[in-house]
Length: 130
Image 1 (tube, rainbow, N blue to C red):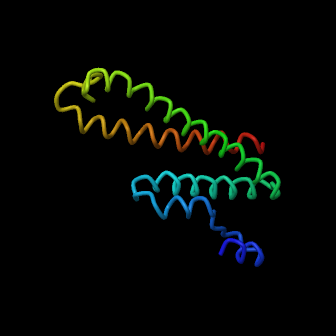
Image 2 (cartoon, rainbow, N blue to C red):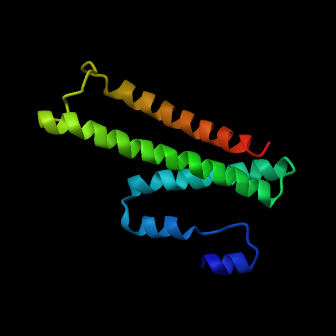
Image 3 (tube, rainbow, N blue to C red):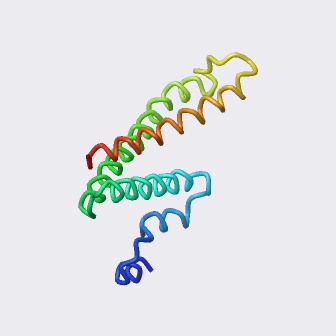
């Protein structure tokens, strides 16, 4: 389908890797892929609106992809490092320092951090094309 869209010159594309990953991952793990696609689309629109050509769009998307890959790698490394105390204590509460009843505030703080990362990724991707 992606090759058909490419041959027609469509601006809409279907990334093969995202589709393949989406087939076997649960929906909560597919959301970051979707958000990344939306950010890439917004960056492309902003670059084109600023007078950039397809090369500038590709450069911005490449920078965003590198940053995103680094974030994914960092998350994997943190997961590995956190497994050490969790396995040693045989509990995931070993590093819990949050007071009782902090769940709601933690959810809001987490959502704010995610929005902050999305905005940062958008701005960092655009920076390469300016």
